[in-house]
Length: 150
Image 1 (cartoon, rainbow, N blue to C red):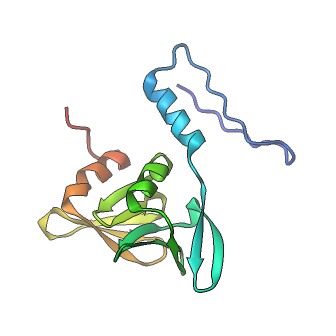
Image 2: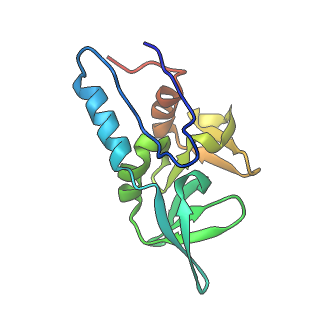
């Protein structure tokens, strides 16, 4: 398989063309999930209402029945449940890393092992978060460093 990425002219919109002999269900599901992914969400900070792009979010965290989006230096409250964000953003490289947290894999600089099978994710903004033991396997699969169990 070849992947070709071209930069459109300034006035052209982005277009994705998939050329394949027989699209399987996995490919169709992936494309539909990506097409339907909501890439912007509304964040609340004090008296401000801000449109956030998913690429700016380092991680989402649930705390005391509220959900927050942690960006480079600001923290915004989000009006979604954590499981809703997980469904919305899994196709866009977000992965569950604990019962109360979803991390943007693009924002992980490196991982280091901790005791009891946990991992510590060092994020590009200097923060560190812990990947719970029960979510380590799925994260490693998503990163391509461990194989799916048969």
